[in-house]
Length: 213
Image (cartoon, rainbow, N blue to C red; front, top):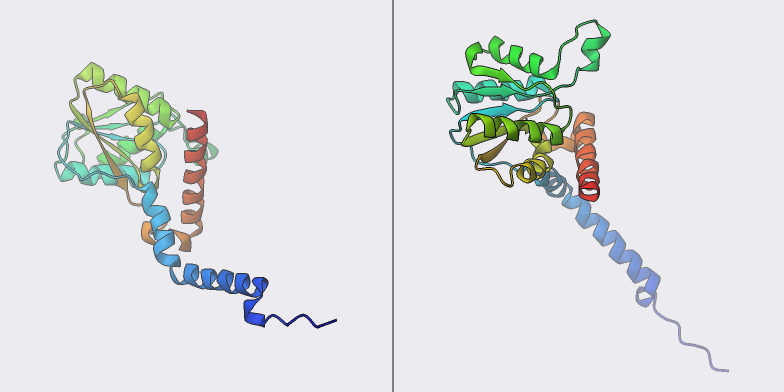
């Protein structure tokens, strides 16, 4: 019997597939920063800032969102700020301070020089969908023509989807604006545990909202 000719090593399938896999890993590693940055940027669905009738500050992170709302007020983006959030932060409950998110945000705004007569509150909503419904009702009852929704930057894509659905039949024009985080840099979110948790949670929530709603 004649011997089968030996296949050169470089022509063997497993070698070629391994080489492609290694090359792919090298390319991904080289592009890791723009790829990871793009993962974060996808979540930041933000509009250019312009003057509005009311700035609404969503509950959830009073420090970041309230500070940004105060800056917007001082920049005369709006003469009216409305704080939302019907949850009580557990850390305050633990030390016997029964304050709701909307109360904390309102106090922060006042501490940062916002006129207290220009700050209103919405007190009942405990989720983004409830906040959207509550704010839509407020806009309808008060004849608000334009509104800015302030949340954390990485929340904006999900927030936008929820609010645009709630305002589908409304005449109010919406803008969405993100408050920068004090816990991590949005451009380098993967270098911080807080950033990793935030991005992971937001993609999980986006998938959950897509399935449920």
